[in-house]
Length: 306
Length: 266
Image 1 (cartoon, rainbow over the protein chains, first blue to last red):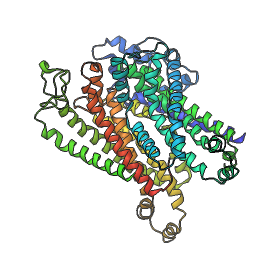
Image 2 (image 1 turned 60 degrees about the vertical axis):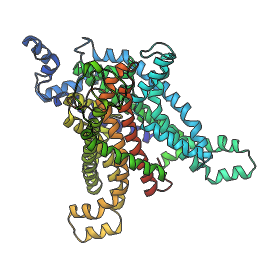
Image 3 (image 1 turned 120 degrees about the vertical axis):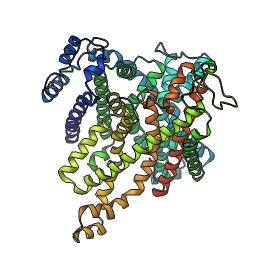
């Protein structure tokens, strides 16, 4: 319980820091942000209005206090391009990103775990080496290259899946493979290294000595413990999928917050950029904390060490 | 694994040679436009084909190699030095300084993957210098955390305690006794860091946040996406270059990691 409280309390300075950093982003622009957003030909009245709307006419400390105050009340300002509340736009787009990340996670698990187990069981074999090379390729292929290659073969040449957009099950296939491949590569490696470690433990030797069939030894005895680090990494990587989604969504015109962020950057819609960045970062922090807590509940050894 | 390491080193060396001499070997300029030859596939005169404006992809990719390698190497070098200094001080001095630096690191780590670099690049504006700033701001954290952890354990070792007892100044203790001890894992991390930074740089360029006036791998690739059906070569060649380079650094990093930490892994 004390651990839980401590872990949640530790979130506060981090969240405050993230909000502060996001607040200062707009002050990094070379020159006047209002000028950049509206362009050189804007009318003076519009400039004054926007400057006032963004609070940029106030002293810096006042802007900062106001910003913190608004964020606490879940008000992220208004989008300049969409003329709507930033929070409302993000709420509409968030589910698409979340489901894409979830499906990609499932795809990654399906691709990753079986070869990882096989490589560990047949350590140093040809298949083990092959798996190692393929997973290195998997982490090396940029998703903005994999995505177009998949589109080229499976959409343009074979016509199996749609080129872009979100419309039903088929539209998930290519984006989730694009997003899930790097994670799959990481999971394969961790499954292999974790299971190789566990298979050397004494209780595995005991299980084998009892005459248990090898399949049972691996699935019932070894895998259970070997999966602990794998599950942890899966949790921690879920947030990374959110950032990977920025590029994947841009390639596939997926209506999520990743693409929203890039569109907002291109239209210089700074309040929307700040809002999206903030929401992605906070989601990541919260998911990581949840993973951490779950991990402690599942594995009591961690709690004892602390 | 040794074979992969050698493959990695060879690829990296070839990429460096390509970046240095590629642009000199090509008879074209990366800006030379031939509208009548737009989207032509690979030929003897243009081994990687031509883009929409008839520009030679080989030449653009060669210049792109310069841009990508320069940006990544600079960003990794800055991250590496800043990370060692900040991590070293944090671990050695301890106390409130350590606490503050660790909180800052926590905050920066709250931005997953390249989100921080995207956010910084979006507000700083595109361009080579800003990309380097964005990538370094994201990059130093990993090195700092690693060095701090190392320093915490090395500080307690006898030879360091002896140096402290002798009254050597802080910078000397750090510079002569502690930092050299922390280097092997940091160098491994820098190798993976090169792979990650090249990926991040080309991602930013792909998203249109990279340098605007010179070709970069990410941007050539993204320009080609609109012509995937009729001219896939535009995207495929820069894509292969990025993949090969990233893979090469991963091969090298993997082997080095195995060397300094046998049996250890992830």
